[in-house]
Length: 516
Image (cartoon, rainbow, N blue to C red):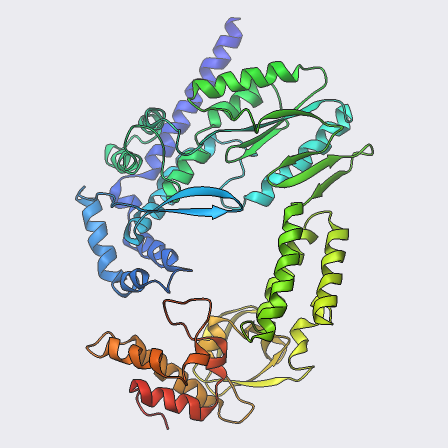
């Protein structure tokens, strides 16, 4: 007994030393909120939302704004701003979203990456698959498959799987429990105050905002006590979870109902409420669902994983709708190729051969050719000439390249090539900003005109709004507006391939500098 107690005390001392070492490695405010880290985080916050006016203003003043926010943080004057509240409805399920301002998102991203994850991650089990680098939705399903195979090698199909889901995971979490963890792990009082302030943006002492990055880190790290209870105290090795979706594979010599009762009691001690309607015990001889996928453990030990069958219905409806969009000119064949192959790739990642086959047959019956031929359909094998209208020194698909202006390239199957080097997709941002169609020999002029138009429209001077009003009202410009965005203007792919006369007209309309 004394030896066991001695081992326990040594392990406890070692854990405490590791905790103190990790807290010291985080450092203080100056270490966490370095200017370079904040600037890079600010750039990442702009990805995917640059069409927003708020994002454009943020990025325009990123240098000075980052310095100002860093100064507020170092002077301990930074306060989280109010959230933008809205709801999203996804497949009949409504979720309330609390979106922070992009200025706060910059701080959140740095704080999460340099403080929360380094301190929280060592306490998480490996099979915790949510919102972590190198993990995710597919990781969690892959772990379940491996655990099922591991169980089969020892017990066959005897045993049960416990599926647990928590009710109101984000809205019901106790602030008191989070503050206890902050006090234990965030030893620097200034660092701890920032974390407490983010949590306190939700009043009432309960709940975390959904849509805030630190909230994600707090919640993926909230159940480790439950995880370690299952793994260590209950001695169940085949268990894992994705956010609040748990699976626990119980051996045949253990009582699954008793195990589930113990897990529910432990969860309630952490002030987590188990959803009785979504939690159940399923024999391994029967199929079950986890993370929107259906799992079947066969008699031979093979694990069959099928995708969501409702996704097939949605895919069929989309394919039929695509035909109408193609006929009305609302969708290009390039977009069709991207959308259809994305849907097929989803089912191909599962054991859904028959579903993929049926979708391919439907596509052929609607369009008259197979999905693999979409990329070649428009040109029928024709190769389009492209030219580099300004130096392209960046990372391409093939790797780092440095192509000077006037370098000739070729397009094939929706990609731009230079010799045997694959550069980029023809509809990508790199293609639009550095390459121009040159089948008429006017590629250099075409590229200069598109750049001049964009540069002129981006000027924030007194005539800014007047220029954009002209673009909105001019009938020549209308075919070159991306139709998926109704309340703001983005140039579509056809704009960058327009004829010279059209581009000269638009350039004159907005007052762009004359291009020779």
